[in-house]
Length: 358
Image (cartoon, rainbow, N blue to C red):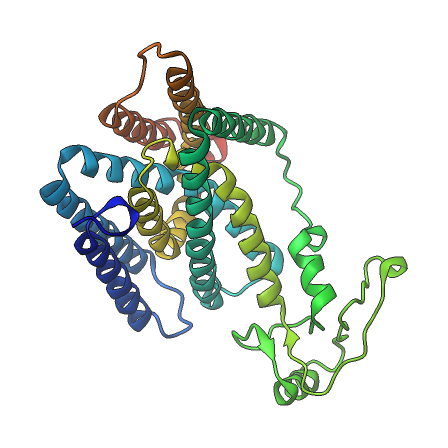
């Protein structure tokens, strides 16, 4: 019997049990604020890859090789496209001076937010694709292509200057909605009345910024009186808000990219979700190896151009029936080759500063 999302209810149940069970195991294993070691992060990254492979094998057995190939292609693509997102997170953590022990907590809630937003975007994207087909594919091709050009231009113009995240939209929104205490207090995102009093005693020189107060731009400042019992945000919540909104922007190219692989909502969402669930541990691996993966981001740009081409080819085929298309197996091969070449090039042709360090 066919259930929800175009697949039998049994398949949906297997996906739910695998993902929720793995999340529970992960949470149970990462309760403390101790930052994971590279070995620990690598082992947990392999754990999440293993869970994804198990689901792919299940799809192969029950739904055939093509369905499994679509899943693995979407999974690999989302994993590779997440690299640039993780590099952004490193920059955000650095700017907010988030201690290593608190980063996994921010990443956990960031991943939960990413899962929710991906679910919304996948539902919208699949719905639009079902209603307007070829025209939406061409629109998605333009979006993904524009993202590739923007990323390429950004890399060429990139300077050593650190970004100022106090001008970020999410940062300004939080300041408008909540009072903000400018110092971190443990791993808390918010402080209650008692915790705020303790934090003020610990940091007597720290200025509590009221909701609507803009210290950097006093002309735009409209402070609101601090209400009794009001929750006060900390820099850790500001950091989370910046990461969440930035991830939403990244989803505008990653969701169309995975939809280009398969139009089945369960395949798209399961591929994205399993890839995203492993991001928390992948972050610590990538942070340790960042200096040795100089060409990985170039592989991401290439894949965005490839996906834009694939979407455009599929859209024009539906409109003009020229018969040209790129198969799921060919797409998987391109994704894996681009990833492999990006990693190999980084190891074989290290950048000058890496050679000097060696």
